[in-house]
Image 1 (spheres, one colour):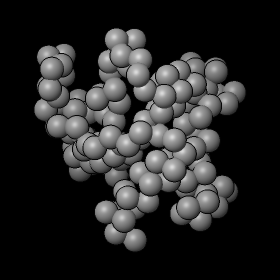
Image 2 (cartoon, helix red, strand yellow):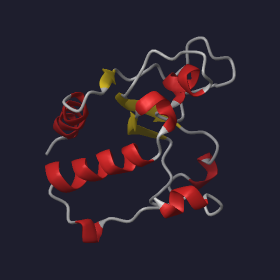
Image 3 (cartoon, rainbow, N blue to C red):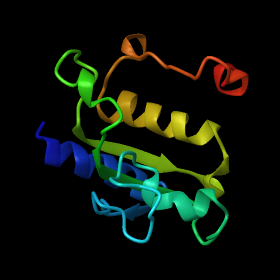
Image 4 (cartoon, rainbow, N blue to C red):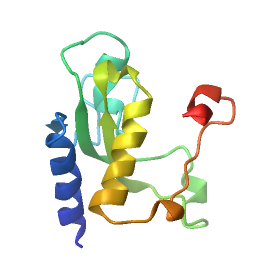
Length: 133
């Protein structure tokens, strides 16, 4: 499967589940002087996280990202890249924490046919709520 096909399948999967699909935002954030580059899929949704906008129930995007915080590690590990595309979903007023993992899990297991036994979830070590989910 080509990357373009995977991206389209991902966005279509969530479009059919009542997510509004957004195109990738600019790598240089417009109207946000707090960021030099777009480094995460959530950047274009910052007004929703801050409660400045409330007109979105569910969203999906595949955001082009440029990370600069760990450039000294790029090329030294298989996990550090400076440019990548981040697929992301944001549910129900950007508040529920259960929906994103379930939706993403369904995409990976049902659409891509990857066995649940091959998946690992990670959470921030101090986030007990996420660990419980």
